[in-house]
Image (cartoon, rainbow, N blue to C red; front, top):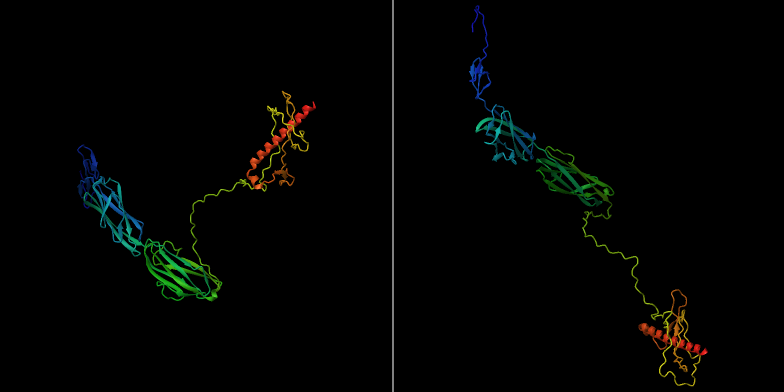
Length: 472
């Protein structure tokens, strides 16, 4: 460079831009990496060469923030590589502060005491990339509201410390304290009754300075007995329960007396619970109960719990009787069987009896039967069937005197009652026979009667036939 002549007191400035030439003959600007890992740095003070390398940073956060005392939380550690080369063998070490304990860790993390280590030789953070590690913890429920919890984390690459960070988080209480109250529903005037108060802390934090206040109506009732938790404090029952842990419950009962002037009225009593801890629900901090006062001498119904129905097996249905049940036969008043209307058997085509070898009987003094002695059968509705063919005797036997028929007594007909009220055909009865005997041998008697009637009919037909032949 050639400089011009300068006058006294004048100055000149010049900027020099340098570049490097690689082995290939290519010019490389200052600050850009040279192939092979070197970089050129230049300036007014001089120049140098830098190799490409990873650059790790670490940051940390917690959810929720602030921490909830007695609840769970998760720390998230984030490692960032802002360098131009991948970082391998990345390890994160997290020192947990007092007030938190290690929860269920993922597979990439392990704990020893209060120190949690994540990553290792197989963990790589690429150039320009990030890697997150989640560490679950539980917050001690006994911490005071506003406690600060310190947490420090460090990142290493192949055992060499690269960066660290510290996180300070505040822990806050959060509770849900509930009160419920029940009372005797009915009491007689000047009688005693009770009410029961139950206080529960649903957590997750301890509820501190828990106090119950229950003002009573001195005009309608008076306090008879207080529990140990509630010292004497006038008409307002005050019960300092102090600290209740998560899911802890306290119950106490107060005995009251209904004054005589309260008869016919309803006593309403409400209790309120307070706590010095932060609450996420205050709508359940008040509970009321009522008691009806009846005049003295009125029976007081004893309340009972609703009985639980006892399950029973499905009953076997009872079959309903049919509309047309089988009738039971009733014995008739007249057990004597009634003969049929036409007991006379139908005569055969040849009703003429075959004569015997000695058909001529010895004549009697009165061979001709008297008409009165001859039993003539009483014709029925169809007394005698009309023969289809007139029997023609093959021989003309010598007429013989009619034998004297043996007369039998006619059965005395006994009228049987009829359901319709009209006269019934008389049922024959036999002299000397008992009705009970007839009932037992009814079938036999009917058969004998039929045989007798048939015999009489045949004899009568024979006589009529013989007279007819003689008249010819």
